[in-house]
Length: 115
Image 1: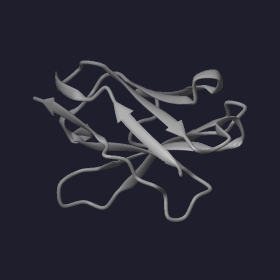
Image 2: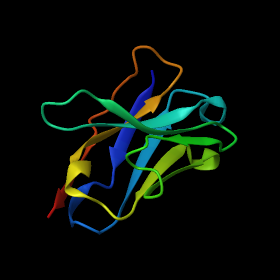
Image 3: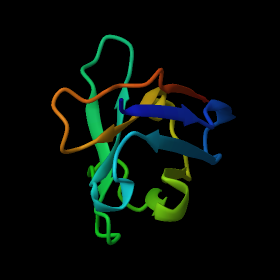
């Protein structure tokens, strides 16, 4: 059974930083492309960034230069470092195993950015 457990969200002022973590179990983590999605109230879930097992990354245009996705295969963990946060980054953030449809969504972690 695949499980994804996100953590690290919180309330931060605009311009601040947060680091999200997601621990995955039930998969061979190192070979899987992992991603971070977010869903703001009233919006569809959108892909923020993804990373291959070897560390190649892709980012949504809205977060390029501000967010960094990384992973530690020894810890089955994927991270999202978020800098220069903006109020429009406010959302629930979820991690995903990109090869799985449907993704076994976890509970997510709420990020709130105040202006």
